[in-house]
Image (cartoon, rainbow, N blue to C red; front, side):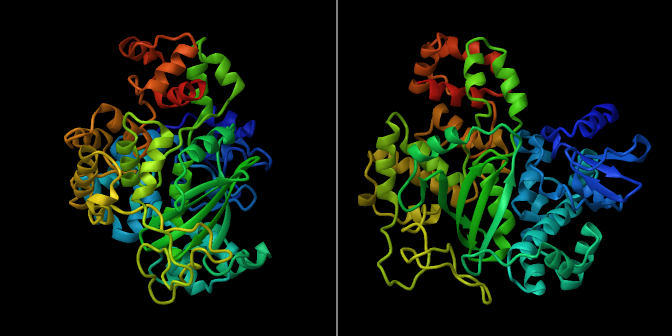
Length: 501
């Protein structure tokens, strides 16, 4: 990736936080790298280098600034929205695929050789997949060191390191301090809530219209899976090594997150999915700038800047929600979906809501229904579990029931990939082959599960009503043609049309 020195330096000189995550500032005279918004004195030009990733800065021998915490910056919006191989790779690395399956597993998921994938990532980000995953492991380790009481050996393996020595060497190299020094410098006790509980801040680029996000999620919340209460969104997650419960509270400048994990190895994927759910890596300045150029949308953008697209933590769950929501109201769809959920656990039941038993040495979460145990329920069923539901468990027409089963079989058989690193065009093509799935459902899934920023469901009744309320064409074909001016942010425009309706 080519970085224009003058533009980057101006951003650093003005401490513009909108560019945090877009690039990193390396200061050769001090040997550190920073966010563009670092409050320290602006370095002299001849002492500055710019890097497209934290991993590239680390590869140049620089350590992370302790003042601005560049490793905690929001992710680049490019990797959040790009549908090419590099964008997909970055989303998969953030979800922990390299830690779980290694570079061969990442390359297989993307359909490229390891060598070619390494070459593409180095060209764009200045670092290969191992270095990018290593930078993420270092950030995960720092969070665990500073917010938990885990021993350093436990932190090392939970963060994805292969050995304690590798963990110590990496932390010293990235932060210029031993792991124990980071913990002593933080000077705070582990987060209240018991083992497995982590509190952290999720950064974003302002502005963020938190009320719109919470309104959207609250209207569609399923009992036992999620809830919105007192400005906090809570839900269960299925993660690679077990289950989790998350609490997300938008506040000024960041989203306060409390994670209760059955297995600490799931910290990085849990954070990635929470960020994706709330669309925290978006670039609202770019989105709102494009939409505000339309006189019909300009007043809405001025009144409500920073509208995000609520996404998904699980592609199959979002697909089932979309199928059930075909041609029915949101309230009706929520009622139907509730019947698919397993019954709440019986008080005193010794089971826990993790997706699979936690490995030895990893504490299970509190029992649902107990004080501090959070939501009462088991979460949304996986594709395998949906295939085991009897006909009587589907309170819907037979055709819709069979569509859900066909989609579940495609997921289980590996014919359909709705993970964040999936190929969007290929996923939509395969969705449209499933009987009962049409363009509306495929588009909705592409927007919310696959993160496509440029979807417009021009036949959607609520979209057409919102368009009419704003004086825009409400005929599907005419509206679709009109919306060309909103590219590449039609998904964001559609959220505003829904709100206008």
